[in-house]
Amino acid sequence: MGQLGFRAARFFRCLCMAGRKKKEPELTMSTPLPVARPRKRFYMQKMPDGVGERAVRVRSVRAGARDQALADFFGGGGELAASSNQRSMESLLGELLSELDLQEDSLAPELLAEAWADAVGPGLSSVSSLISVAKGRARVTVIHPTVRYEITRMKPQIIRRLNQILGPGNVKSLLIASA
Image 1 (tube, one colour):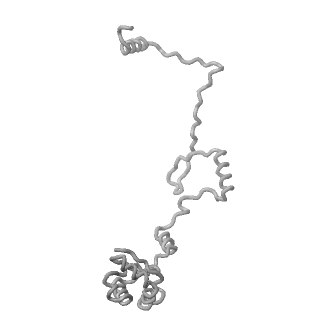
Image 2: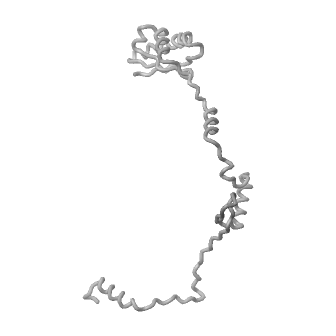
């Protein structure tokens, strides 16, 4: 066999073993028996409409007791049917949207441009603009840091003038951003 090589030796060994039967392992007291899986048990249940049947898996007593113990501990009332928790999309969206505060307090852009020009004058209105007023915050953009400094210095007067023009309580704070 030394001259044939490993593959050839394996091939000849397989040829020699082809006609022989494999020995069955002898069972003795020390060898454990093969473990058989428990069979899944099913029973046939009639459909609610009475037309057909379906196979339902049998639940063990232990699984039922475990589920009952968990339901008792967590305060659950057992399993719910899928249809007991179904709601229409319209009712869900209505409930969700009513809980959210989605009221838009924003004003028209043309009105904001006029109000800004009246509040700060022509000099500052040419280098800054009022973008939006929402939830009491007025957002302003400026083109240069010095303009930002001037508007920051005049913040209380600008807020007072904007409230006179747009209505009391519309503007509570001023947010200034560079463009």
